Amino acid sequence: MKRAKDYLIFPLDVPTYKEAIRYVELLGKHVGLFKVGLELFVSVGPKILKGIRERSGAGIFLDLKFHDIPATVKNAFLAASAHGVAFTTVHCDEGKGLLRSVVENNPSGTKILAVTVLTSLESKNLKELGYLDRYVKNITELVMLRARMAKEAGCSGVVCSGLEVERVKAELGKDFIVVTPGIRPAWSLAGKDDQKRIITPYQAIKGGADYLVVGRPIRAAEKPIEAAERVLDEIEMAISE
Image (tube, rainbow, N blue to C red; front, side, top):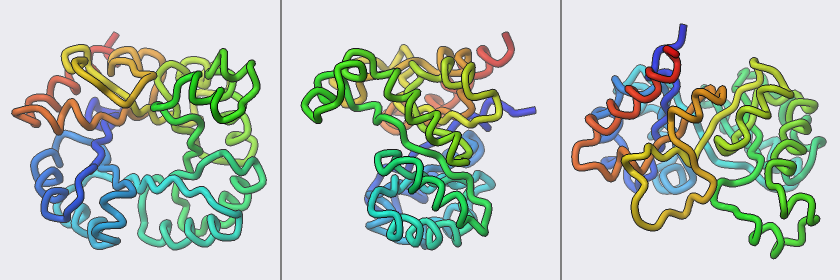
């Protein structure tokens, strides 16, 4: 049975190896996975993955959001998966064919998550990008279109906002993994935030989310361990009900 910490992903959104390892050592007993994104991976390279393994029992989510022509994405994924990471991400924008080509060339068994719609996007952004009105007026419909595409292509799951979790689970099944970014505990909602479609840890877990990405509320706290524990308490409350 999953423990509260197994749901929690902490993004190492810092530019240096030293800063990243400080958080790994500080939070290693409180999170299920550490997420390595573009900034850190470009800055530090694969050695950060080794550093995480040496200092923590947590898994690794390599979140590079691959998006290019199919041949390039397939080869980039193979290079990434060779590092033995638990999850990695591919954008849905190229369609089912690209997703399937990655899924079918996965000797390491890395779980492939399809990125549906970034949580920083709002309807006005989709309109500017030329999306159909049906998607501009209802982002959930676009998320579901892409989630179905990912499932049909054989992906292990998707990344989507907590607002869509319940519907993804209801339509695509409880075993289809949903990773939810843009998580903001109620006590952290203050000031400007570039994440637009956000919900609390409690709401996300009740909706059926398998993993929650919680960064700034923990990283920006005066006492990050205490902040992580507050998030875990909220997750525990949801899974115990």
